Amino acid sequence: MNNDLHVDSSTDAGTDVAAAARAWFEANWDPNLELGAWWSLLAESGWGFPTWPRDRYGREVSAHDAPLVNLARREVGALGPPAGIAANLAGPTILSHGTAEQKDRFLPGIVRGEIWCQLFSEPGSGSDLASLQAKAVRDGDQWVINGQKVWTSGAHIAKYGILVARTNPDLPKHQGLTYMVIEMDQPGIEIRPIREMTGRSIFNEVFLTDAIVPVENTLDAVGSGWAVALTTLANERTMLSAGSFGSSGGGMSITKFDLTARAGDLVREVKPSDDASSGGVGALLLSLIRQYGRADDPIFRQEWATIHSLLEIARFTDLRVKGAIERGGRPGPEVSVGKLAASHLLRTLRETMFRVCGADTTLWGDDAPLGGRMHDIGFSSYLISIGGGTDQIQRNIIGERVLGLPREPSVDKGVAFNSLLVGTQLGSDG
Image (tube, rainbow, N blue to C red):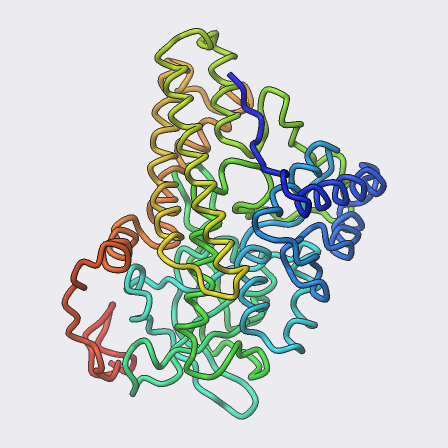
């Protein structure tokens, strides 16, 4: 079995990118640097977020060639850039919809490891996000926010949140929304942790009572929040897609790091030629199969090959999404295909891992298989089927936009939001 990361550097551009990235990491990676210093150096170099614009911490590397940068970094053994909601969701959304002033203000913290959260879902507005009821009322040069959000990952440690609130209940539900950036450390925000079956409390309920957002934190035009949210959701589904599981770097990060820590102490990744990477789930499974002496078992070899094939298919789908963005377009239904593939992949991976480990599946903690990571993957596999839009929503999108099936009946099209019976109450004023 060979678990080497597959990337194509056959083009001249790809060869140049790979060589330049490798040279920079070899010359600049120092495991003794403090984490904050390393992330700052990486951000200024453009190699941390290579697909971003050159004047915004990037190098305008194509989506096709971007994996070569990650591979070069891993070969050198260097720590990757910050990941998670700030870098994967807020950053790209601000790049697409923010003003120059907003980019100047928010991007420096994002590329240097600030924690952000996503204030979208509500108790009565999950799959039907456009029916959200949190209200934003203009008061001079600020918005006053009242409402409740739920399933907010990392809210307890976040500096900022990306928030969608209703600014005009007299318009149909998709048209009266506005997207804004809110500071989380203020008196009007109460955060209550939600205990998960993993034992952690990454998710939270967030209660907003006369919370304040400066008007200059409004992203794009007032009332265009749904269009901006679609950009965020497309990036979220890409982040949670199966393609993101095949290599290290990216993905969901809900940890607040000590920026004074030694950067080298945080490197968990290993070279692609080694047994396992902390990022690639295919490599993790391969490591587990070898650890339990199942490498010659034809059944487990076939199951590993199946997962490897799913990862490769997902990687190509991910490249199509990134290619659409690179051409200046908006990601299409490919993001839903990738997101749905992630649910299938993690369920398959979970069941295979549990069969490999047998009774050891019940172990927990550092002495468990893969130091407990197997349990994390098993329990977290349910998250992917819900977060970023449920599997059912993704199937609806694929059915309507790819297969051309009829849309589900919509009785609220063109109806003012305050006339609708939605969520947990009647309209936004009921």
